[in-house]
Image (cartoon, rainbow, N blue to C red; front, top):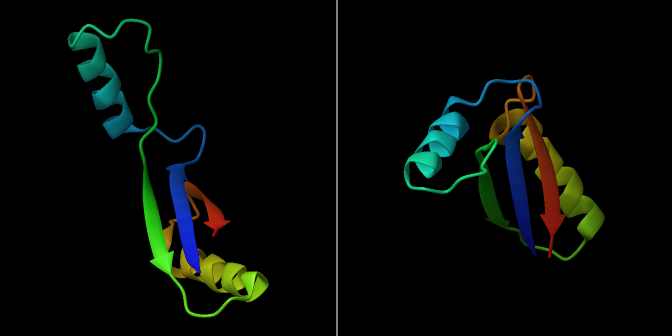
Length: 79
């Protein structure tokens, strides 16, 4: 089973990397870009085929290591 974890800064948290990308896009002639938020995507290959157990395990990974839950949120997709 494969888990995909998308980690993003929470709304209201300043995103200097996203702002740098937005500025660079404008400099390259891409008009109309009003905001950019940058995050990270983590893919995890898991043994087993129990989606509920996998979701619990990946949630624990996010809470302990993959996301700083004070300033980041995360979304888990299992395939």
